[in-house]
Length: 224
Ligand code: A5P
View 1 (cartoon, rainbow, N blue to C red):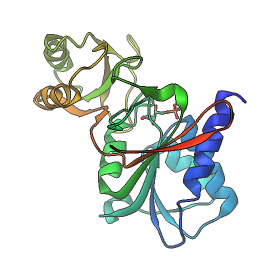
View 2 (view 1 turned 135 degrees about the horizontal axis):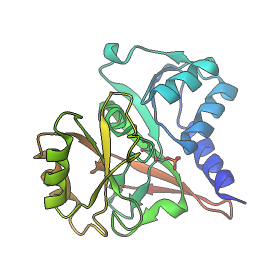
View 3 (view 1 turned 180 degrees about the vertical axis):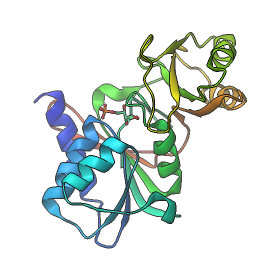
View 4 (view 1 turned 60 degrees about the horizontal axis):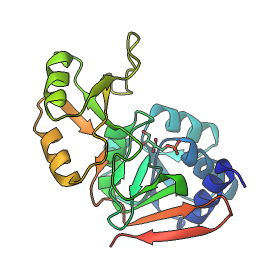
């Protein structure tokens, strides 16, 4: 069983949580693609909001019922992938797909936020493999990058000479903190930088992580 099959298994398990009548938040990424395909196949009577233009387009292509995000105050369930999932706390790093700002808004609006991933994403400390994506306001981006560097973040502009632009018209610095001992203080320090619009550290937001491994086993981790 390869990594894609593991992602598909995690997605199928998450789809079992979907009920008719739900308002559903849809994440972004390759694992969520399997969730979208499953919704297209199973056809529950749900209304969805998307965390990215890519997910929105794909969901519409599959015939899912999409809501205007501005009309939605609360969601019953949000399902999203992650770049790292910390064992025990279920703190996350998200945003390697560039959709972190909307992903965080959608996760916060959901009564239940469930992560789907293959087991390569499980870490003991955030920052073990993934950088922390930080979405910044394009104006004065160098000043914001300098403030990030002061935190020891080693910020790298995503896309370099041809910068990646988010769905919201902003830029992303991928910040290598190496292993993060205290995720709360890193998140707090990032939030104090004025040019930072969102960062990929999701603290205590996920209630459950559905993790599938290459041998086909699916585990449901609950926040400790
Ligand atoms: C998108 O911005 C990210 O937060 C994704 O959720 C994350 O990168 C996981 O993506 P994959 O499912 O493709 O690994």
